[in-house]
Length: 339
Image 1 (cartoon, rainbow, N blue to C red):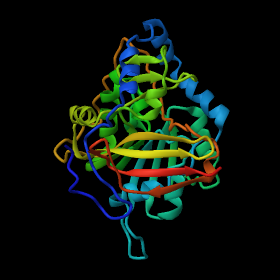
Image 2 (image 1 turned 135 degrees about the vertical axis):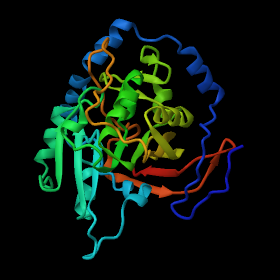
Image 3 (image 1 turned 180 degrees about the horizontal axis):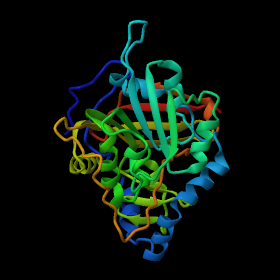
């Protein structure tokens, strides 16, 4: 049984390391889908990863994602009330910045933040730089493949207070994840943190995939060629520890998405976590990044699924506590889409 002892007041967060229990129909569907995509097609997807993300931003421009105002609530320990006496300026790196939905709301609210922002897509970085809120004195955006481009060539080693990885690690091939995390460690201060949110095991988006989309266990390709990995909390913790981070917290988040017009109610499962770079683990900035020589250096970025409606402007989040299938989840948000 999961521990229900750490319930919190509004917005009602209940932490757990338990994945969602599947229905018999869902179990049957996953067990039936055992065949992986051919090695030839997988290599093609890896080699064309950047092109696929550039095409994604060409199609959707800046309209696909909403600004992520929830990040201040979910990662509240990173931020503080600013006044005229506040002198400390925090430096943040956003990995997989997209078009700036995390970056710009925070720059607007907090005057004592400096942002580095990188993305795999050249087109996405260009959208960031064209934004009216982009100020080179307060942020620096650049294109980067974090699996093989040395971050310390753009950012001085051991200078970043926090790194955000929001729906980005899931787009990287599992074989390259540790390399990417070690690359990030080079520019993160000892004691600095990674703020993490990504797809969780048995998310509704994972269960929607039909045959012919499975790359390997829990790793799938979408119709547009972009990819997504669905994490288990214990697996993610081990991955981070192998890259030199300590786990501060790592939990599942249940988000219930409701479409009244179509009569749909689907469970979104995310993993939210905070990992700390060991104070004793100071990375040598001259040390080269380990790259798998057999693979081309390609990488995905991030994509948060828009499942039930494209009318994102009508979405309303209602925070409610819940216990499902005898297992508590970190947070339940009922997203009601007005018809």
